[in-house]
Length: 282
Image 1 (cartoon, rainbow, N blue to C red):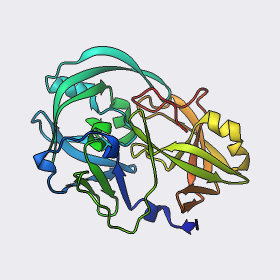
Image 2 (cartoon, helix red, strand yellow):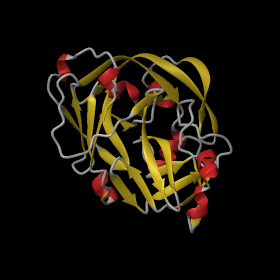
Image 3 (cartoon, rainbow, N blue to C red):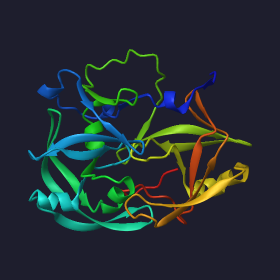
Image 4 (tube, helix red, strand yellow):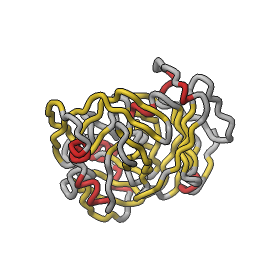
């Protein structure tokens, strides 16, 4: 298979996600035609407007890497919602307390997602990092019900009914695996050697590429990066996780090769844990 060199902007201009092929789907009358929802971009994140139980418009991050959807605990309390139970969710930099809100009705520009269960988590650290209010995060519950097309160039998310959806563009289809309700794709890092790994497709991460410390150490990836800059990060626990950023030679997904992308090499001592869920990732 030949390699195609594209700019990162072009690679990210249009992404289509279909989690629902192997998941039982209950057709909704509102899904009979494509629904187009405009979005804003903040720090490379897709921000949608939606409402909860008939509330005023709220701001949500659309996140393929979230195995469950999240609402700000303070926003849930303001809306008079009952927070059930308490648990510790592992996130980058440590653990954070979470509760659950049941019977949530989400509306995205006329698309109804009834009877959802959302995790209630403190999002003040995320809001401080982005410099704007974030009321929640939309994850797997959205992607399992629709084929979701994210057009970064036009800043529009389109939701399609999976039973009748047919892709007609010139893009390349790339197989994904669904693990813990999140999508992974086999990709390659090309430097002094070729290293293959299973990478999370994560629209909820502002950077291009995140590489976990154990994976980087195993393959000695930092040895081929001529210059790095030390950073602190952590979306929910700001400043609690350290890392190094630098440019790797190439990153390949399917036949698409991204030249000189910036990679964040996590220095977290154990396997990196995805925000809002308990699983490791590369």
